Length: 380
Image (cartoon, rainbow, N blue to C red; front, top):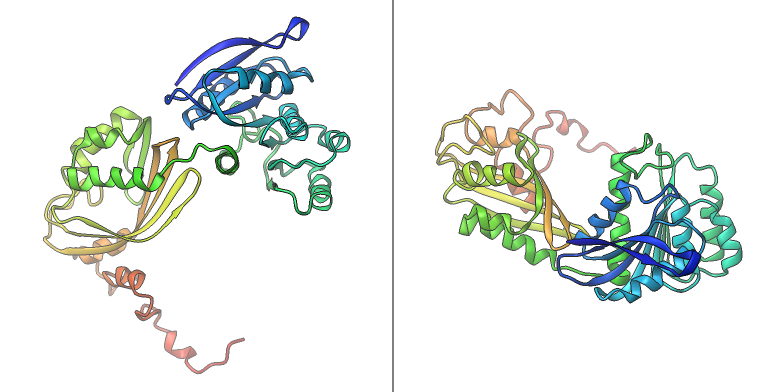
């Protein structure tokens, strides 16, 4: 990723603008409009983030009304730009993103809690470009705007989302209203729209398959890190093992994950869901507990027991690299299978959990002692 400052516009309308370019050197364009408070650190960080996603980003510093057209023209003049152009903005910047879409100068827009949207819709006529609106839950105007969009553009490519409990500025980390869960959900939805209308599109399947091959087959920590962003994040949720940042994640992979993975470890894929910026894998993890597995069973000596468990991996990407992983499994089932937890004392199961995931015809409710009491009873 590379960045620089340029001037856009002409005469009195000249303005500074921040340009951020992906590592590939080119990509589709994204006009990024801030909240009318100057191009602050949050805006430049966001521009760099979208550059990591594969976009050539131009963020103007001047919030004047002429900025949308000047920004789009400047984007098209950049030597790194290739493909379509989208716009994304916050507050007053969201309104400018909508203006660019209404003027048909871009391929689509993302609007975060825009200001004065009704006036733009009044004078713009039909907004026939794909447009995504993020509304704060406490925005009293949101319901009316959404109703109007549904009425005026029933067949248009318009998406609207309201973030309950979130206030204006919920996507800005430096705002008192910042809401991380709403901000991250809105980001993923925004990226999905941009990927669909202008790209770039990456083969997430192949990237993640290569990552797991390097972990479990090649068993090379340094090579595994090449499939990840510069500062990745890994968390095995049941026992909180992993790493945050390059140094800690490499240390984890090199000394605690790859070396202690069982010799016969294998993953059996049950299902895979692929989104714009993430993969969700449902798998079986099968292995023999032939050594102390630091990342799954820290502190427990090898028992020699064979284990099969359902495992879910939620893998988030940034561009063509893995940004973070959350890995989930039922630790109680693992402990039952290696003989350190008595299933007779607790409502837990062993290898049956894996069999049930793989074969839906395996019996249900075997742990429910009262299940037989409802036999033959009519449903309410």
